[in-house]
Image (cartoon, rainbow, N blue to C red; front, side):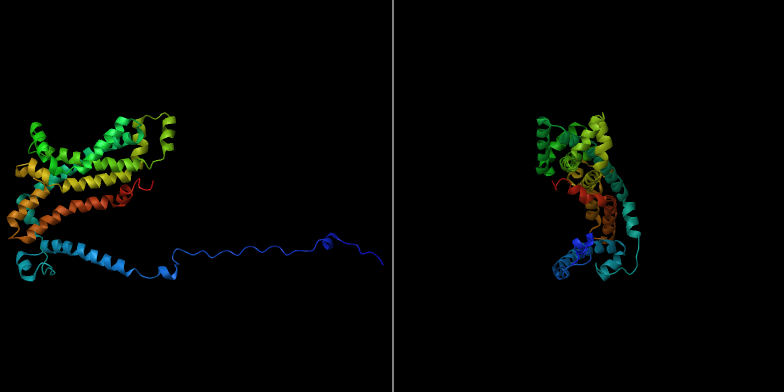
Length: 307
């Protein structure tokens, strides 16, 4: 019996090539389980209630400012205006309210500029310095968050009179900026701590001095915090009432808050639409500030909380 020659293919049995693994189905962001498809009725109800709470007063203010006084008394405050008029705004501006608006704009702009100019280098020193004196100064500065402005109105009045700045816009700017500094430094410190330390070290190795690091690295990366501080300070300066009331006397130095208080006292029971027109005029700059900084507000307020 003759031996059968074996070829290499006969010695090793053939094996089928392994099948590639079946790709797992990737669930897209739009596909959710059945438990997640249920609408949040409680959340929708809460959002609707909150919308009504916010929208009704705004509608009342705007609609009342665009109607005549007789229409307001006959139809009611929440009815739709039959004839839209702008005479209420003309009445408010002719009564000197434009001066109050201009004073508030000056006070707000100067306060924001002063706070940003002082808070930015102070926060940079807190983040980069290892001195115990700087840390102690930061702790003392944060104590200002617990001191209300009403508790210091008498010492502030004495300081303003000694500085011979009573009944000036400077008398409003200085204490308003002082009470805005603690929060501004806290927000900017949290924002600067999010900057990686390697970036500071890289610029230091390249020979950059602290002023150059502050201008070229810190300033661009802390833009959300700067916008947040600016909007927060602007709101506080625009809505301030206690300092303009105590530290000013003449009508030429009154701000919007005092103007509304004075105008309401004169026209509140007689011409409600004109009073609402004054309220609308006082809201427009705040709305512009919010629209300008709304993209950076959330990131600026939450800076540092992820660490």
